[in-house]
Image (tube, rainbow over all chains, first blue to last red; front, side, top):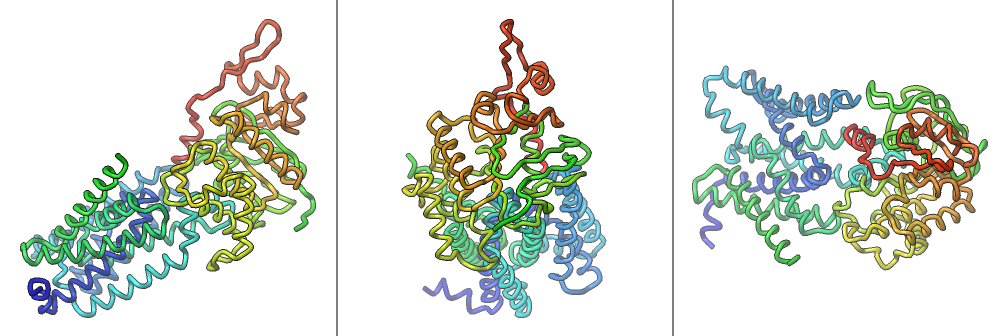
Length: 271
Length: 267
């Protein structure tokens, strides 16, 4: 048992573990909608889109999560704006804004002295740098996002499964869509420190995809996904500690391994 | 719930995606409780019209009035049964979940289904004879069963106006008759119905009115008034084959529908 407890004697590991589990659960729950609504590309784009916001904070100071949040929401609304009239397809709008934001972010970061180190932390996360106040912010924001998902469960279900029905029931489909984008943006921002910009998409998609294979209804899918997200975070962080590899990578690789297990189990069952 | 006047009133509407106009200057009135077949070649704008009627597609010009009030003024009036291809059958929901969605308009934003909602869902399942499938995943259903689920959901919505997109395409005769039987029942309850179909025979024999479209209104009225040689030539153009004995054949089956793929992209 000692090998389980030993890492937890360090306070930064305790905080890192808590933060990873919270983010793992949050990404996994939001991920069910990402998978079901086919928003994987959007999630990835949004993660990269927060780069300019992060860079500005690094350069001029300010709150990291706030800077990232502003950038993410700006890009989310920008995508909605360009694709709304149907002149440009949504994935085209995403592609344009995603690349532009990424380029702007890297341009800003490349002006910094500690370019390589900072960029790698932003891209791949640095879970051991989570401070006590960061942890509170991560926990608080995650709670608010999950609460919103719970409150609008019915509405998001209909809007995701059958937009035509949502429209005939006079649900505010546009508002729900924008709310979903904002929740996704906030999720990406919250995940920034633990898994980083490049790997958020994996945490959004992989546990939810595994749960999709195993569940027959939405709520069980969310719960299974959340459990897998938490499990991946815990196992990943221990792997990261003992093998001395980047935590974000270890977490994502664990989630991928769990997906492969789920996939093979499903295949074996249907034979 | 009573409304006057009882009708669906479409006034000079223009519909399209961006600058691409699909239907223009469309103008017709449907009396309360009528059963209307929406007929036209692939890409004529049938699905586009339905999307506008359910509020999925903004109207570029003109007005749609239901019971004399603007579209959107009513909460629970229109039920829409999508084409089967338009549904994500791998979505993790059960048959009962789907039918319960029909009640979401009536129940409050945050409330859980009431006892009455559950009773109505049970009755709707019963009516479509799929009570035994209630806890089945929708992905495990046959084509006919899938159709029944969405019919059950439409019943659960208790609509005044029912829109169905190609319910007779790709189903067997038994399902076709079951659907028509349900339509008869709904007509007894004075539900107004707009149903798109490629089956001109069915349209002529089992519907009160025909709405013939091809990017505009070609003709609207009783089947014998609408299905004239001139109208059909205008609507179907070169897909219409005029036989020597005066028989008309429409070669319009099963082509991949450009309109559907386009509208799917626009969502």
